[in-house]
Image (tube, rainbow, N blue to C red; front, side, top):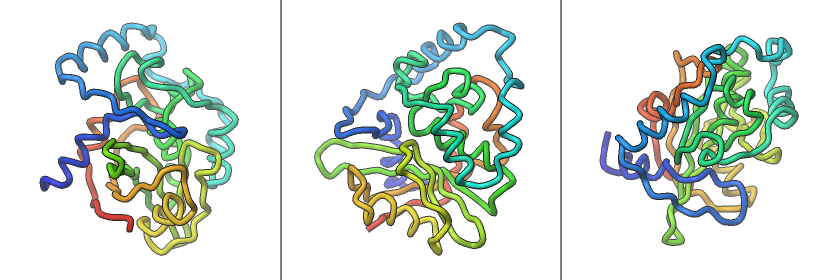
Amino acid sequence: MNRDTKDCLAIIGLSCYFSGTVAALPVLDQELQKAKTAETLQEFPREVRRFTSLPHEIDEIKTPLQARRWLDENLSRGEDSVLYNTNDFFAPCGLTYQKGKGDCDDYAICAAALLQGDVQQSYFAILLTNRDEESRGHLAYVYQLNNRWGVIGAKPSEFDEPFAATPEKALWYRYNFSHYDIDFHQYILLDHSGLDLLNGNQDLKEKITQKIVRHGSLE
């Protein structure tokens, strides 16, 4: 992993971008973060440590549009600091569904879980900018279907049916050309294959962010 990539990953611990302003949160010491996570897990009863109670309708979701509608109908946006008492928590979809709320990474994880096996390939895309002397980050799901790439994000407007030749072009169109609220100019693609994105209540951040596929500029 080169230095540029490490620098990019160092600012992943920011609040997901939902509105006009996002304040950079201080990066917590690893031991403090682990302690906070441990406290968070104690809040959940043992019987819900593994989820089997998501509605059967998720098995019927086969298309990106169906996944987009499921996200909009079942989830609303919430901050990790409120939901999990920690700076940044990548929740499995079952846990997000139980909470009924999540931030951008939770929406992306749910999109990936819903469409697992229904698309050719897919990645999580971290989008970054630091042009205004304030680093900001966002995470979305980018997927390939019929040899074209599309995007699903937290906002209802963050949705593109597959149209682009590469994930980079799909991200550039959605977050630069289409005049998203903020101009993201860097990206990191993360591989989520082999991960259980549906069950449990463990933080998936470490497992997801260590599987970097590539990164670069969206300009």
